[in-house]
Image 1 (spheres, rainbow over the protein chains, first blue to last red):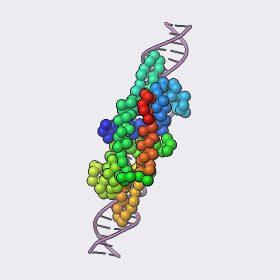
Image 2: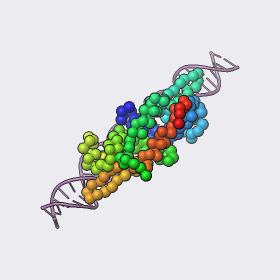
Image 3: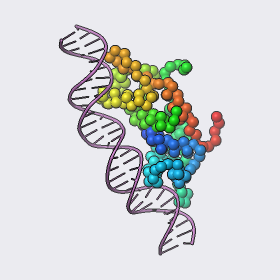
Image 4: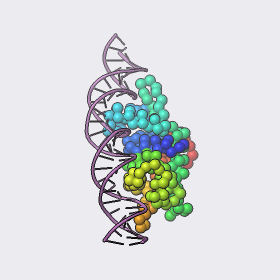
Length: 95
Length: 95
DNA sequence: ACATCACATAGACAGTCATCTATATGAGGT
DNA sequence: ACCTCATATAGATGACTGTCTATGTGATGT
């Protein structure tokens, strides 16, 4: 995973609504209607946020009838986590 | 570390120049002039990026004579990494 | 066929962002 | 005192962002 991809994901997570959405998806797949309940934003705004999350690669969508079910993309998430974990603060030992 | 703090850090990392700066600081403290060499941006623009990184809490600055030395803030970095690592993709995994 | 539900798209708008040029600040050196 | 170097600040500008209202789309039910 290169810096451009990571920056895109960070940008997606740089909005606290979206960050909370990701945390909610940590529990497992959820439909848009379920996510909607938790936020004081309109349905189109949520849809916009979900699009950004999907485009970053961090979130997958599964359409089933009228519903859109969103879930975290494990592969992308893990690659992102590894990238972030690879940053070190230089000092050999902490504390 | 709460969602607002994390979102602020993500926002700071959501620019690829800043993400690369953080990667460079992973090596250890560097002065602005050293960072400057690596980017095709003007000095004021770099200064602007450094301010955003400092305000996010992820970067510290140490002034010494004419120079500004930047380094990663270990405490913030680790807290951020833990937050990111705590997101799971739902499918059961160890730990 | 029609109405309804779940969601996406379009367009608008105010606010924020990354970048630049120009200028200020402050530390050293001569 | 003056000049230079390293960096910060100010102000401008065009692009992008988050949010809204209004409307479109496609699936489901009567």
